[in-house]
Length: 242
Ligand code: 1GP
Image (cartoon, rainbow, N blue to C red; front, side):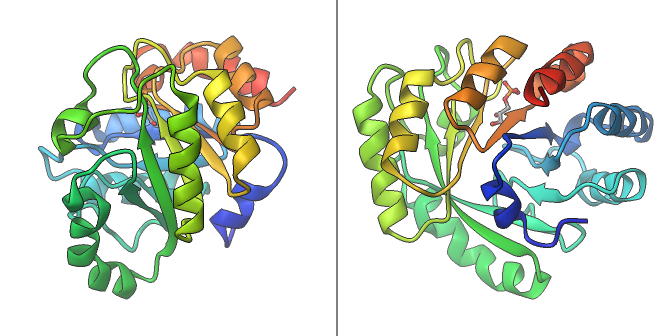
């Protein structure tokens, strides 16, 4: 079991992560998902969602813990998604937006609980990029994404995040995005900062994953396809493990 996840993110090969939304899960679905995750050589499991409609959060973590030995990182949509059953938390500050609640407000509320949880904290600049449709993140946070074709804005935002001391940058096109972030934007961001860059949103093909890996993505996050087209997970994994 990896002890320090930030260190893992900095190692050379692009890591493969799957995002599990606790709301969509049953015990059976989690069992079969865990099997796929292991067979497909996934490196990391992310758990979280924009909303929690049910009470499956802790149960989901417990089942993933029982059925896999992979690092589990919280990817919280709000300050209710904190648990010491995970290994780490992406403490996301939505630096592409100008909503103070998601830049610092929720963090103030959550800080004492995060400290008490003993989780590894990975301070992360979360950057929402236009993925061709209104994303849940954009709606829930009431923020405007960075335009798809404006790498300069993404570069300056990521640089500011790094200068402020953030330890990773997450380029997010939004779950179910029509288009994932562009390779050009990723390249531009990677060449201007030295902290790890995570990419996610709308990644559905081995070709997309391979192109993002080649452009330097430290970790690729897949959400929807795990539930909707699980066969693609193996193909993407093979592309990344070449
Ligand atoms: C994680 O939101 C993404 O960054 C997941 O996106 O569901 O489109 O794979 P998908």
